[in-house]
Length: 195
Image 1 (cartoon, rainbow, N blue to C red):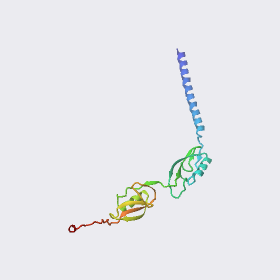
Image 2 (image 1 turned 135 degrees about the vertical axis):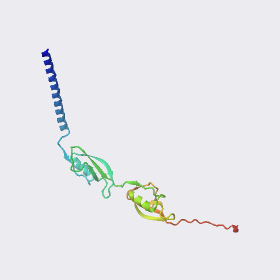
Image 3 (image 1 turned 180 degrees about the vertical axis):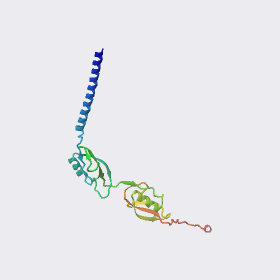
Image 4 (image 1 turned 60 degrees about the horizontal axis):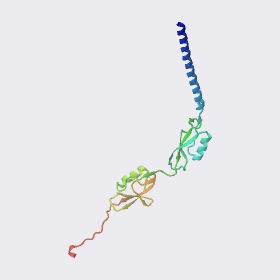
């Protein structure tokens, strides 16, 4: 009986030992495969492609075995259409071969903004403040008969606009305000004795 227990114990011990060895070999094999698959320890330096046209930036990235994706477009005055404004990850970062570099490109057209609710809604001073706050420029002021410095209209390139009209950021507009002189209406007074 004692011999049977000893044999069972030895078999159990070797089974546990065999399972431990198999798990260790599987882990070592998995980590070795992952290192080779992910090129562990191998990294490329990201080149600086900012201020390059997209075509040139793509060539530079491909020379470094890197991919690219366009993340978004922004408008920045003074830069040509399609020039790289930003990149992620930044230049000199260490990345794996084939990694995508995300690019932010310049667009030639400034973003369009809605005209604030200023027509028949505020004074000249408030209108100037609100227009400047959203990126418009008051180029000139025209007067019409009406309440002094009340905004009666907005013009852009000679066209009358409505509240909410979309214009490129930085547009120069003309405000139409009241001169303080009320319009007089011609009235005809009839004398009762005449009839």
